[in-house]
Length: 385
Image 1: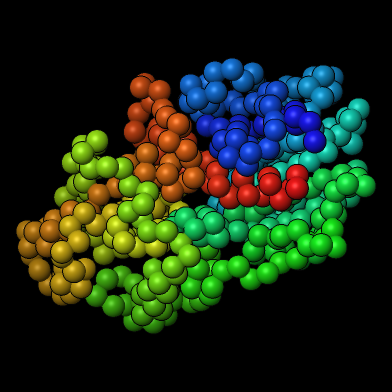
Image 2: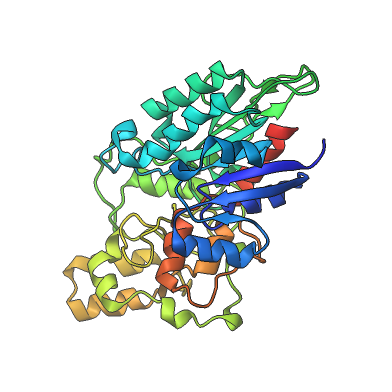
């Protein structure tokens, strides 16, 4: 196979581009497209030689797409219309307009791309947008496979369950993707030129890749979590095929960690609902764009002092005075993960960096909008194999 010409839509900070490099495939990104000015500064900082178009996708004409003559289309359309905590506007949400525009153009291209990879949030799989995507791909002669997978599948201790679709136009020398049910493990090529789906994760690891769906009606323990929550975390931490958090941390001598400590106000207000992990843990919850600004549901925090047991801090905490509560909670030395550490847990290589003018909050925000590089690299290898 010669060098692939790649078009990267919704390019963000370059997660897809890094995944392409990680995959080892011979490829050149002929154009990247995004309208987020902060993300574009970061992308250009890391990929100065790539043509970056700061324009809406609807502003790119059919002729423009044809001139790019691309073999592989990478895209991660806006997820807000499909998130479970949003209003789930689906195709009625104006933010799906650009994606529907792509689906309209795809059959009219002079030479449709041989390969397509799409990423989105859990919830996209049951959307009307997904139905239109599948219909368009089928009419254009693509075969495809849908996969729902989390970074724990590649040994990374972070839960970020995402929907992926890989599609290709089959030829005599390529295997056929089978559009059956949505897989929850990585397909692997079989000798029959089809794909099989072995269980490559233990039940404990698999639990880390998706949130618990069971009703949480059990009584709380010393912290605001049930016995089921505690058991699930214990199972995740026992999964030896997943790395430990400490493998993804910055060397303490190279960064001032004091600035990342949780404030007294945050400790007192949110202490009992924080998702707290230790360096030896093999789990962390998904980091969102609100990390560092909001606390609840935006990502895990790290326990800096591991000599202190959580149970001794949180047992009967509500019966303590505010001063004693703060004394107890402060012993844990809880801190946010640094942006570099979040990037590490999202599979970004050490060569990835931020321009100096990008604030810490902006760094968290764009990382929360990005994807896991290693997961996408594995899917690209599978797609083009």
